[in-house]
Image (cartoon, rainbow, N blue to C red; front, side, top):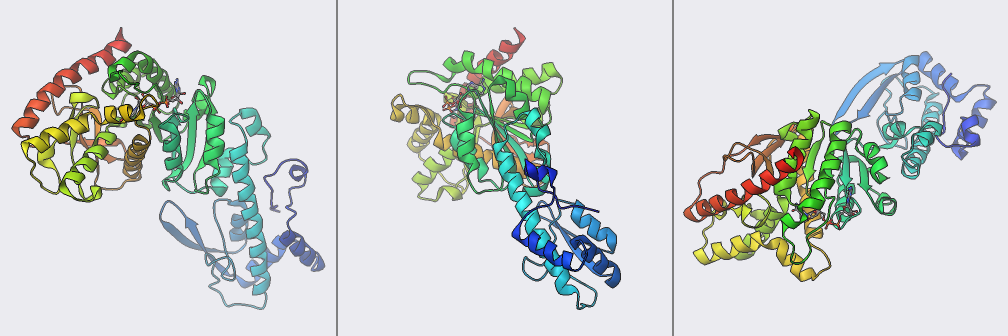
Length: 469
Ligand SMILES: NC(=O)c1ccc[n+]([C@@H]2O[C@H](COP(=O)([O-])OP(=O)(O)OC[C@H]3O[C@@H](n4cnc5c(N)ncnc54)[C@H](O)[C@@H]3O)[C@@H](O)[C@H]2O)c1
């Protein structure tokens, strides 16, 4: 006979029957009748040949089917993913297609009680998922394992890891990803401070289960099974530092993290934020090639902050809401390699040469504007976290199979003679499924493109040499 199990530990593990007030009440009632609650239910199903309509809730779709008899009841007890509810108090997922009989209230009470026990179990499972450290010993000793917790309690969605999650970008990025309904599991990895960030973010009452991972020995656990990996790990630019000054520190960090990705989640989409993006993307590509896991569609350098800034600054000039403005930004993600195509702005707009010069320069120097304003206290973190989440959300919508998801990113490309270049790309189930051409450029943009390509070629080569040397 099926039993109602509690996921909690201690004496509950020895006594799998849940001691909730509803359950006790129900047990008392069923003892009076000389039957276990499940006997009542099975007996009822068998006698009435009642038909139960079951609703399976999935990722945005409902899958309904009907079944009847004892099997159905066993199914209910055994299948933790399925939420069955009576029509009376908890909702309407189970409906009785057969004639109602005088026993129906008994059935309904039984279902309600069982449902509350199940919900209590799910709550305990969720709490345990947050509290248990990612340690295989703990997992084994837990009555309800972590995977079961997801099956019983979690919303459907994607598994996302943030590497560098305790940093200036990482923390707000983690908070915003915890709010994203497409995320079911959020892994926060850093070499410092992840327990605190995880506890903090984990208290947010949104669907994703958050788990923290600290230091190199936990990198593999953090990465295993991930659909999307976002990397803001590294050091930011300080006043007077160029993005290329960061190269030596961040190149090594990105190499190590990408080796972990190649080993533990080679099919994940990678969103690379760590600077200099113009070099770290080629570094990541070389690491994946070495490991034999390179899929150019799945490796995306995040240039979304340039687009976000361009939309904001152009909207200011045009007197529009930034949401109404779309500015393609191509090339790369440093200084003159950032090339906003103002001739292609939507809605179609014209700018004076002076406006074009000022806007282009402001977009290219947006990072410096923040570094100087923060006066030694860091670089762009909040706007970057916003941009990273906007881009990650687009990647997840692509993974889900949404049509027409198009954003700019720095990817492997044949648009120019360079092996990597940022343009608009269409995001799909396999990442950047289509890389769009530049479109018609005006004279100002053609000059800018040549300048951008010259600098980009050097940065790309620097990244490739870092791994091949
Ligand atoms: N792509 C963009 O548009 C863009 C914009 C702004 C900043 N950035 C870059 O993002 C990176 C992070 O910036 P930040 O302001 O958050 O810096 P930060 O120093 O505040 O945070 C970086 C985090 O990375 C962690 N870290 C360091 N080594 C690590 C490793 N081996 N594994 C995992 N985590 C590690 C640090 O502990 C820290 O918590 C920098 O390289 C910065 O230049 C990119």
